[in-house]
Amino acid sequence: MPYLNYGDRELNFKIVYFGPGMSGKTTNLIHVHRNLQENIRGKMITLDTAEERTLFFDFLPLDLGRVSGFFLRFNLYTVPGQIQYEASRQLILDGADGVVFVADSQPQMLERNLASFEGMVLNLESYGKDIAKYPLVLQYNKRDCENPISVGTIERELNIPSHIPVFESVASEGVGVMDTIHRICTNVVRDFRL
Amino acid sequence: MQLTTNNSRPILDELLEKSGAMTALLISKEGYNISEAGDTGYLNTTALAALVAGMFSATREVATLVGEKQFSILLQQGENRHIHIGLIKDSVMMVLIFQDQQRIGKVRHEAQKAGERLVDLMNRGESPQTQQQAVQTPEFKEYALHLIDMIFNKNG
Image (cartoon, rainbow over all chains, first blue to last red):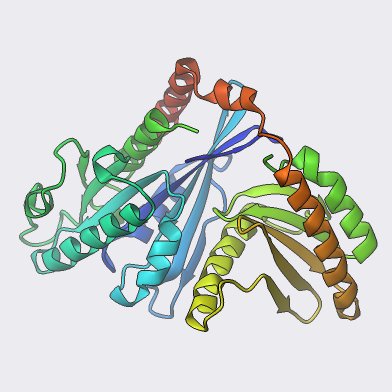
């Protein structure tokens, strides 16, 4: 549920980028940050380790502007993808209004994609969310790798509802990144109720 | 009742005056900034809200690991500035930034009293319905979607 600040007339949404380690979640946020005007993007915060892997989360606030007298804000978070940070992932998903699952298209990463997606579904269920009715976008990243898995593989393997939007991306070059965020923001606004 | 800038600001102002702290903020557990008072010019309050909420969530898990439900107060001690964070009704964090370390007792005491007043406020009545209804109309959603299309198509 978005947070409506009555005093300041702000409507705040939380979007989380989820996925296995090194799949490109932070790279998505960096590209979004680079491509938006300064009056829209806030300061990006990254909590990473010496190896530049996300330790707790990345955070990027976006101020889209005013709608009927209300400020429309989206706060983007990433989760740490590595297996050992399960507790952090669950905490960051709390209160999320929508999720982008960033999958790694390299064939050797399929198993980790599947495990991460299943983990996300369990975490969302623990907050009472049903992915069949929840704003979720699936992004197949690293499409420029050798022998990328075919689009549709993850959905087939896990029986994911077919209405979930799917995008192909090369986040390191910005391909597909803005289409992905455009769609998740759209679906979050379409679906929200207070 | 939901805490807002309007209804909580007098309590925060009084808290700053009595405790001698320089900045007070109320932050929701989802990481949103509810209200602020005092000097905030030196602070990125949006980033602070997200980080404090994350820190408090992590601390709750640490508490569970040692057999506690929650640590209700966090104190961060720096060289010149210190942060006192108190949890209010399991959903809001009150952050106080102060400079004089000798005042920690006073800060803690005044924070406790202000926290009780904020709980009273939260327990009183219902949240205003008018604004909730205003953002849930088809027109509001249509305008919001149009804005999203404009921003992301232009920058896509």
